[in-house]
Length: 256
Image (cartoon, rainbow, N blue to C red):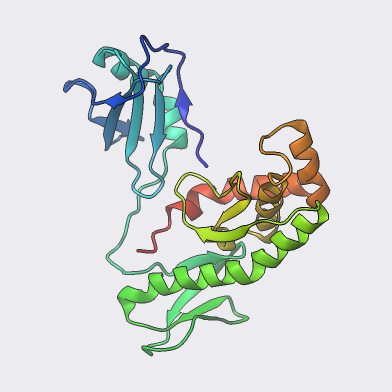
């Protein structure tokens, strides 16, 4: 999860709806010496400017309060150059290949090797090789399904076990590919996890599961919440750091 860049520019006369910004708002942002597309959106409830980047495309998204002049947006981007260079995701420099040579799995790099067969399932060897069947343009979708299946088999039992320790039971455990977060727990006790976490180290997976299960008893990030996390995963700080360290790389990998 990339933290957005914020300012303290207050909004005037907030309204419920959002609106398009003036036409002369900036339409690009400089990142490490290169220009990238920038989408600017005026939001009536915004009380400060917020800059985010799409981790898949690298595109900038700037939300501004109603009434923000274009000059203020440009000044904000100029003064934020250091933050932008440090936090903007790298662009995908694809070489024309339909899939990369290496894919992380359980925190270790694995070499992707097409089997040449149309049918079959993805398999992993002791030599850190992922053997993938299917046409070359279907390699990444096959790997996406592999990671999702692995997550369902490995993480769902852990979710149920930890929830039982808290005297709770989730109403459902789902696996999705959200862009902005690794997981969530709804008020209806539905736990959703990103299947991408299977590319992260095991300690990162353990932390993510403990984090979302703890929300079954505390729907916030209070001291009581973190105490619940620690009871489920005593080494959660290590897992949290591991997940954060791998975030940019894993969220940027394209499977479609």
